[in-house]
Length: 286
Ligand code: A3P
Image (cartoon, rainbow, N blue to C red; front, side, top):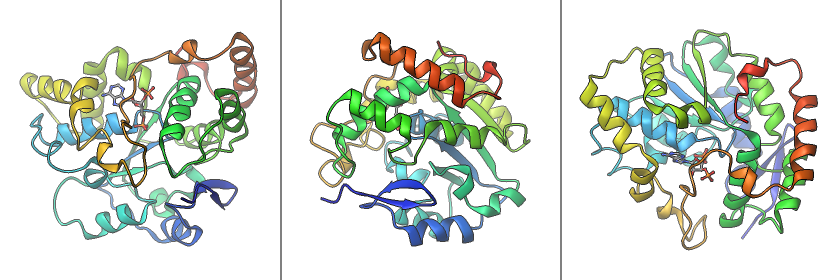
């Protein structure tokens, strides 16, 4: 199984899934439509949770769709060949799209469109821990030998989709645009109801109280964990080891159970250096 990276404009991508030609095509030629709604994240920031919420907002809380169609077909990843094809051939359903692409290689058409982007950020220390377990369970990624080794790769941006710091810096430069909503995993976790309402407002959608209740119930961590269309169990064998689920812990602050004091201090220093220039209120997680 190939676990090597291919590089496109300095960003590592697992070569089992991505080719430079294809990433280039998406970057240069994919035309986004004004009605598209794109969930953009650095991997492990809560992507699938937000997709599940968007699907349920569309169905007004009815779980039929999320329980019958895999999550990657409901909001396909634009940078994967299958996802790209699904988007191009889609004739019905909401125009949901997902992407982990850094802004500099995101479809150029976005910059002249009204397509809406929901960018989700998460405490990078939790992203790191989540990514460590994900890489250990994913057969298409380099399996980390230890948390320390993964920590070093993460800091250097030597993991799929490159540096967290650069990804967030890049996308945050767009945060004032009307067609962009920035959410954090932490606010979603702390007050899911208000955050779902915020998403509805951004999308110009209305839910009545019962519908909102159903959205919350059917997108809960437990509900997603039990939903085979959302928990990635269908990808075991081809992409993941037996027993793998994307719904691992679903909590904030798990880094405290994993980082040494030295790792936490060093991370903080790097964070301050690399994220200087962005307002601290964007990063309210510790
Ligand atoms: P952990 O590994 O910390 O548990 P992504 O979808 O971007 O790959 O992110 C995966 C992370 O989101 C995992 O974090 C996963 O548990 C968490 N997650 C998925 N669904 C969730 C939900 N409904 N509620 C809270 N966290 C969720």
